[in-house]
Amino acid sequence: METLSFLSEDQIRAVQEQFGTPAFVYDQKTLEAQAQKALSFPNAYGLTARYAMKACPAAAVIRILNRAGLHIDASSGYEALRAMRAGVPAKEIQITAQQLPDNLQDLISQGVLFNACSLHQLASYGRLFPGNEVSVRINPGLGSGHSNRTNVGGPSSSFGIWHEYLQQVLATAAEHDLRITGLHSHIGSGSDPEVWQRCARLTLEVAAQLPDIERVSMGGGFKVGRMAGEVSTDLQEAGQPVTGEFERFAQEHGRKLHLEVEPGTFFVANAGALVCSIIDVVDTGVEGNRFIKVDSGMTEVLRPSMYGAQHPIVVVPAEPEARGQGEYLVAGHCCESGDILTPAPD
Figure 1 (cartoon, helix red, strand yellow):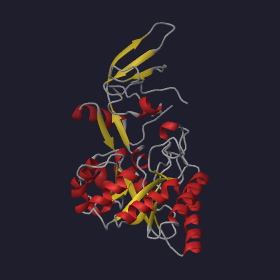
Figure 2 (cartoon, one colour; figure 1 turned 45 degrees about the vertical axis):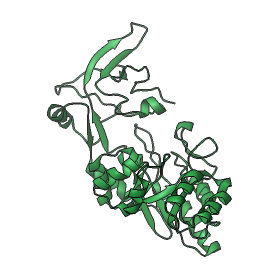
Figure 3 (cartoon, one colour; figure 1 turned 180 degrees about the horizontal axis):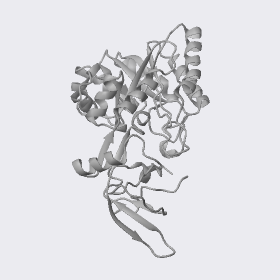
Figure 4 (cartoon, helix red, strand yellow; figure 1 turned 60 degrees about the vertical axis):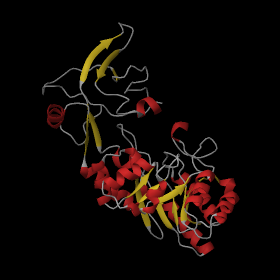
């Protein structure tokens, strides 16, 4: 049985009455507590923790996490602009995007950092900013996640420059007089410390061939337990073997590299609640199912439809009274068969 986390039943009724539904509510204390966990990630020679703001681009959330000490990972030029409008200094924002922003020149001129995710992006950046510093994202050939849909590393992923193309990276950088000072990899939503250690080792093997590297980002994707019984990643446990790899690299190559991590969902998954209203209850007969329909759905929470992910759902009665129990599927308000908020567990 799922329970309410940071809101009381009376607070939920007040939100519905004052703001209407659907409405998102966030808990500042949870956001700040999660930020401190990330900022305490084990490291050998310094740490920058970024918030992957695609997880929740609400301006208030961005401001809270930035004030707590987090920098920003933006997955588009639009996100970078949104972060700046929320008060984040440009120099604390790095763009790591599938699509090269149309406004890249303006963003870079203001101090935003850029992480090239393909050879095409690296060459395009070089033509626009010859002689500049740049970071590159590589695909180390390793992925991690609970399914292929959350796996962003390995041969099935389009993210990053395939690790075997390093010589082309070096040639492109030389052609445009670029200094590659940042190296980035991100393997997916997993939590196995051994996998993180392997990824760190593979990434640092690439760093060894890039003489100007100063900082290495291991990405994010830390697993977050949402449902009762699910376990979240212990960042201290995940980070210790990564620290060991950075220390080993320093001993072998004489370079002490700055570590970066960039979780997203880790900060907000259990810090937010979506308050919605029941609009109908239907069934498909004695042998069928019973459905609760709500005034929200995949338009606000896409993970159940996209990934088959489960989220805790608590029914709050309109009046504080005892109610019976029963089995229902919760359906969203979209005219799509996949708009189900209670998918079967994997």
